[in-house]
Amino acid sequence: MLMRIRERLQRQDGVAAVEFAVVSMVFLVLLFGILTYGYIYSMDQSLNHAAEEGARAAIATTTEAAAITTAQTTAYARLQTYQPSLLSTDVVATVGDCDSGFRCITVTITYPWATRPIIPKFPGLPTPSQILAVATVQLT
Image 1 (cartoon, one colour):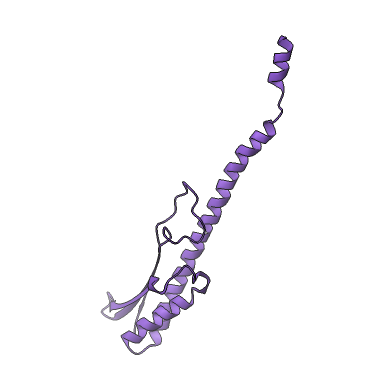
Image 2: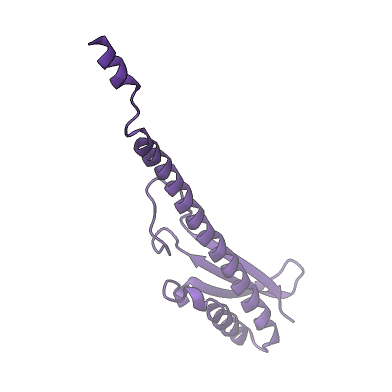
């Protein structure tokens, strides 16, 4: 009788399946985290690039109103990849005084990641509430 108990305790039937279940869960969480943060980083870079392009495009305009319109239109056009989730109201351009005494245009793009994520949110994975990009250029 004692031999049967020892044999049952030493058997390893199903151990591989349990190990696979534990390891695969950790692997999937890591994979989803990499994908989520990759999308966030990519969107941050795209928003920064679009804000810079919009601010640069405004330099060639003659009036401040035209500079604002050009900056917003150019920045929004550069974000064609994200257009279903990005709204034109997320792109704001303002003209104001710079520190140097000249007029500057500032293009701000704010994307609310918490309310409009590109990929579904994974429970327990911390993500930013918004992604912000700001670019300022001196007008001539």
